[in-house]
Length: 517
Image (cartoon, rainbow, N blue to C red; front, side):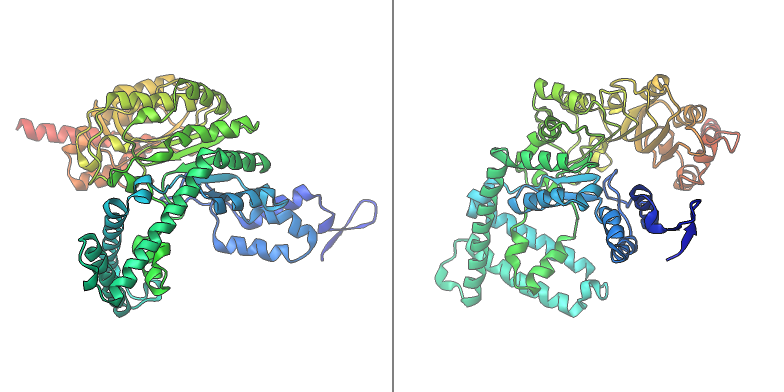
C-alpha cells in the first residue's frame, strides 16, 4: 500500500488516517444519491454499483469494514406486523449498519376489519375483483417479450389457470350446490378459505401491535437508537410498489396464490372499495411517540391517499399542540394527501371544513423558523380535470419561514396567494409550480413575479404543466414552447432573465388582437 514520509521520518499509510477522514473517503467512493421519479422526497437512493463498491471495500481490512459498513443501507422500512418490527429493531441495534440509516419509511397499509370478519359478503368478492383486475392488467403486458422471463404463451397459460380459479370462486359466491363442484373447484375453494383464515390471523396480529402500543414503541425506540435517522416517510402505500399482475404471476407459478391474496390493503385501494381507513391516528401519533424519546426530527414526508374525514387527521387540539413541539426543528416538510389519488374514483373535493383541517395540520407541522424546504401536493382538489372550487394556496401562508429556501406546489392557487407568499419571504427562494390550476389572476403576472424574485446562485424557479387562465387559450404547440422543458423552455428563460420579453404576454396579445379583428 502506498505510503508518504511524515515530518518525523515515519512512513504514513492510508490506515494512519483518522476514522472520520476514511469514512468521508468512502462516502465519496459511493457517490451522491439520486432521486427517482415516483419515490419519496428525502429518501436517498444509490445505484447498485455504488453499493457493490462498498461491499468490496469492506473486504480489504477490518478498519475499512468498520468505517464503510454504515453506507450499505440509508433507509429502512417498517409495517404493522411483528416480523417487520423485529427487522427494524435488529437493524437499529446493529453497531455498524444503524449508523447509516437516515430515513425510516413507515408503510401504514392495513388488513381491513370487514375483510377479516366477513368472508362471503366482503372477502370473497373483493379478492375475486382483485384477481380479475390483475388478469386484465396482465393482458396488457402480454405482448412485451421476456417480461419477468415469461413468454407470451406462458402468460396465456397463467391467465387460463387463473380464470379457472375465478370460476370456482364464482360458484362459491353463487351458493351453488357443492355436489356440482369438481376436484379442481374444491381445491380452489379450499385455497380461498385458507387465505381468509391467514388474512384473519394477520388482522388480529396487526390490531394487537397497533392497539397495545407495540408498533409506536418499537418504531420510536428504534429511531432513537439510530444516530442520524431523523427523517420519516409515512405512506399509505407499498414502500416498493410492484404491479399486481406480476405478483399474481409469481403466486400462480409458485403454487402460492395465498401469499398474493393475504396482503395488506393500500389506502388508495381502501378508498376505491369504500372501506374505512383504520390507522389514520398514526399520522400524528408516530412523530409524537418519537419526540417522547428525545429525538429531534428534521424531515417528515406524508404521502397518503385522500381521506373521507379530515377531522381525524390531527387527532384533536392536544395532538396539534404536541405536533408543534415534535416538529420544532423540522427543516423539510412534504405533504401529499392525494399521492395515491385515483381520479376515476375520487370525486371533486369541495369540503371547506376538510380544507381547514388540512390547513391546521400543516400549520402545526410547519410552525417553526427552521423550515427550509416545503413541498405541498394538493392535486386532490381537482381530480380528473374537473374545475376546482377551493384553493390550496392557504397552506403556503400559515406563517413566515425566515430560513426558507425551496417551495414546491401542486394544486389550485390564486395569484394573490402567490403574491402574498413572495411578500412574506425573507430570503431568496426557489419556487416550483407544477400542475398548478390558476383560479384567478394571470400566468403573465406569475412569470413576472417569479422573474423579480430569483433564487440565489445558479438555481432557478420554474413552471411546469400550468392549467387555467391563459393556458386554456393557447395551443398545445405554444404551451410546449413556453412551458415545456423546465430547463430550456421560454418561461424558464424569461424567469432566469435570459430573455427580455415575457413570452406569454406576447402570445396573449396576439390572441387578443385576433379576437378584436
